[in-house]
Image 1 (cartoon, rainbow over the protein chains, first blue to last red):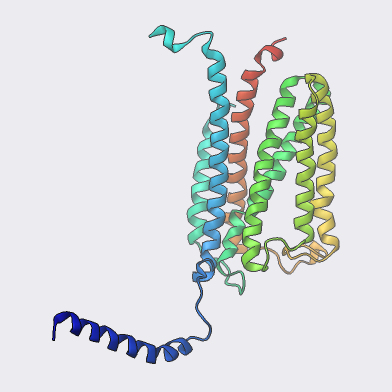
Image 2: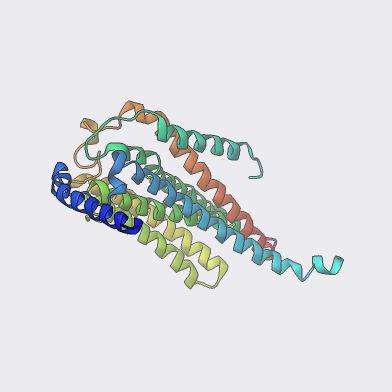
Amino acid sequence: MTKRNVQKRFAGALMLLLSCLYPFISTAQQRPEMADILRSNGKIYIVVLVICTIFVGIIITLFYLERRIKKLENNQSDITSPNQIS
Amino acid sequence: MRQSWWKILCVILLCFVLIGGLLLPVPEKFILNETIRNIYFHVPMWFGMMILFTISLVYAIRYMRFNQLKDDVYSVQFINVGLIYGVLGLVTGMEWAKYTWGTAWSNDPKQLASALSMLIYFAYIVLRGALPDYDKRARIAAVYNVFAFALMIPLLFILPRLTDSLHPGNGGNPGFNTKDMAPELRPVFYTAVLGWTLLGTWVATLLIRIKLIEYKNILND
């Protein structure tokens, strides 16, 4: 018997075992487990989400400020341009 | 305006709010669980918005009294930052509501009233954009500002009390309130209100400085 055949048989046996155990595994839990990270750990991730939202808001405000200041700098540049000095 | 001690204070207060708000003990409640900590982030947005709108009102009244265009610049920038806070308050409130009240928008009286008062202030910005003349714009905006503020008070503090609201502390007489904020929440909460308001004022002063440079020629007349 080749090595590959042994591996195939072992994998098959494992799958059979798991498929037999599967009903017991699934009934061990009261309800089907779905992805629900936001409600895990006492819903702490809602707080994280809220803090991140506020952070993003502040960052957007910063970008807006940056744009306004850049516009001011461009308007000033036709009086004293740094390129002309260098 | 150029003094910086209050900006350092703002950073220290907000550091305390972020660390203390996430780590200090809070009341253990069903449904709310840890989301009770949002009281340090969602609620100060609204408090900050109202304080910024109040400052804006003071400058609007000053403009009507002294006719200085500078006061109008102050007034509008405080409203701009107040609106940013309002939008953040609304979005964070919807995120919080999704996982505690079940839906993001449940037509709660306070949700509707805050959305309405924000629409009134957005109309202020639109109204300003529609008037090209500086002095006329400043005067009409100042008058509208007083009306908007006078509308915001009943919308946020009186109407939600007349019916039942999902927001704790609303509905019924506040004098007999059994759902007052727990004492252990108060120190961080008041710090948060002060810190977030100072941050808003900081942003507003930056916007005012930009606007004053833009209007340099008009203001010097």
